[in-house]
Length: 312
Length: 298
Image (cartoon, rainbow over all chains, first blue to last red; front, side):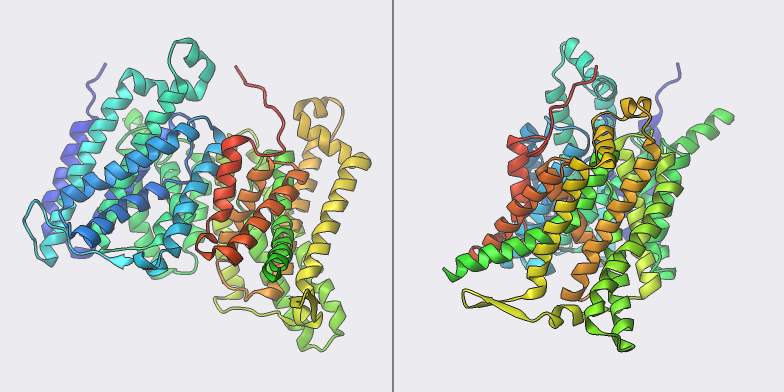
């Protein structure tokens, strides 16, 4: 048995990116932050997906995380990144804990549809709340880091490093979790729920836990994106946002905790180029890519790495 | 009193519209176990084809009344072309995959169709108001309602009635029910399930396109109209119980009246009242109102 090198590899890759970040153009740093932050949301989907569940409503927690940051700034003047992320994680976690009691009883399409319904409710509330800017949303300032206030240019670099640290922490946590007994229940539940019950584990509780984990990751992702973009709006809760996360999850595949981030970086890069060169066929490119991946790479792009590793 | 009449009539009109866009989805879901996200694409294609056809029709100065046939023709043409293309060309190779994966495949098709609409018709809005203004208004309790909207109620009743009649009283309808009940057993009994699937998908696609075609005269047809419709239709189908025509009807009524009541009494909740109803129904009836008990697989 070979030693598990997943976490050290991710750490090295992220460290390399962080070191390089001050020397690349700011738009690259920006895409990097967005990609890693959305990768966190997808990482949450991966945890759920391993149990065979697909949530079409992660945009709920993504938007909650973002609005937690926004509201903390608006009503309390809080701009600290650490506090913001903690708040976002807490809010997403609490909401998921409550909704989880209901959702943990659902499977397949019903789980997908009910989670979608919840995200659309939040969307409806946000659009109608004029104090929160309705469809326009509102702006939030460059975050501070434990009292330190960076300038505009260094702000993005700081935020990137911060995002990378969050990413590493999340990968480590999820990787440890998936390797634990509770984590191994994921695939067991997907394959045969009733036998898992016979083994003495509560399927409902296991799914509830995973749902909360996924929500916290989505909340943190939303908080990071909002701080980087500097603006939040209800579109973050809309179902197409959630569809995009599912898309990246399918693209990346469930094999490794690193896969969502690779998938997410590829996705954001493709998007920025496609938007520039073929703005009207961007969805078509996406759709075709999704079809091809589902047909020929059922385990996502990550299986390409696996295949080449085995060949060598 | 006026508000009450307005809520009831608006609610019925909205419910009929919801039923028209949702019934094709529930049919495909019930028979094929495919959650067809591409339904939103059929809707936009139907709306665009109808609007474009109506534009040409009136430009040439054909008799006004014939424009309704243009709407129907657009729906049939779109449903046939896209339905056959997608079912025969793509979906039939995927039936052994997981339900959620098939839903994702149709999501991919939806994304492709969304941009296909842009490529064919461009980004500018299309207007096809003529069939709607042609019919004039009717006063109900001193409130004017467009006759076109009231005609939608009639159309929904006709479509629902025909579907119910076909499923209950015809041979082919009973084949369909058999396939819904037990796909494998139907194959053993000599039903050509693969053909049933194709026909169902094409009919479902036509109904989706019809939903778009009849909506075209009352909206401005712009890119992205399918995105909203697809989640609304999902909500209705989930409330009613997946694959149940009666369920879709009751679901539409529930959602339509709730939405109309919200619009007139409490506009703040208008946007999400539908999803609130859906969450409530699912909380108490996890598989929708008209659903059959499911066996748990070991």
